[in-house]
Image (cartoon, rainbow, N blue to C red; front, top):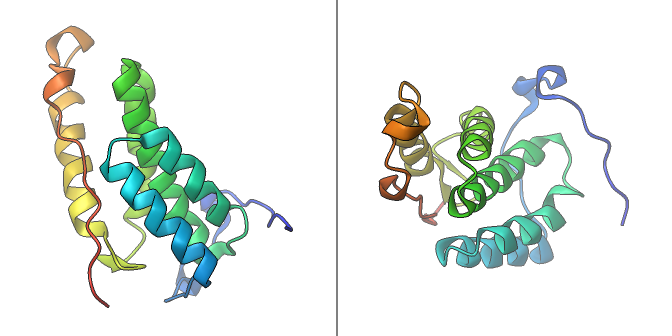
Length: 145
């Protein structure tokens, strides 16, 4: 498998993002990752999605990367690494908001709402003021077309 070179987000021409199709194998990885994520097996979802991310060209790389970072955020939250949770959550938001509300059959709009609700709950509070256990955990919903 050939790994596609990485570019920073700032170097990507967003006007080239369009609809894209996953191979059968990539779709299987995406679906398996969704099932793992929704079962709160965040690290495993992250690992499965990396198999897609490694080989995607720019058009899909940032969507998959956003989902990977979302999984990493919740993995950090479960581990009690609150700073890591916030860093990954912001990075996930930065990438996911580049895409239409329903990209790759994923309800991106619902994911972003949960991310934004969590960020709004914690960004202006000290670590001690936040009840980390009550933050909403996103579920990934698959939608048609």
